[in-house]
Amino acid sequence: DADVLFIGEGPGKDEDEQGRPFVGKAGQLLSRIFEAAGLPRERVFITNVVKCRPPENRLPAVEEMIACFPFLEAQIALLAPKIIVCLGGTPTKWLLKTSEGITKLRGRWFTWKGIDLMPMFHPSYLLRNQSRKKGSPKDLTWDDIREVKQRWDLLQEKKGQVV
Image (tube, rainbow, N blue to C red; front, side, top):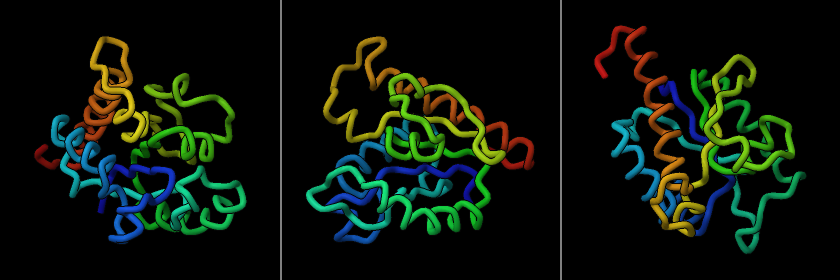
């Protein structure tokens, strides 16, 4: 029962070992981002475009994404989220069917099959880009997650739930 669905690229080593998405360093950062924004992790659902770790942690191949897409579609259908957040270029490009990069797409709202969709930088990218200066990936991610949180808050208000 989650109104917000976060979609990453694919499992990493820690995720593969534990069988849960976003539990490694990138997942820990994502949890801190949620906490700072006041978005409870237990109130969102997190998944990946591909369900198996690509060898050597490479980008998923198109064939792998095609093979896994029915599972992602089923997750989306069962959850019926009101908001999808794509973490990084892979899920963003896959769902929006674009070749445009995440830097140009992040921070903008799109509609995918009637669902509000917000692309954001992947937390692993933020781990590689430590700057917090205005306009840095971390700064932009803070803007993006606050946008997502505001939209989530509005959903909760409409449902009559306390945020």
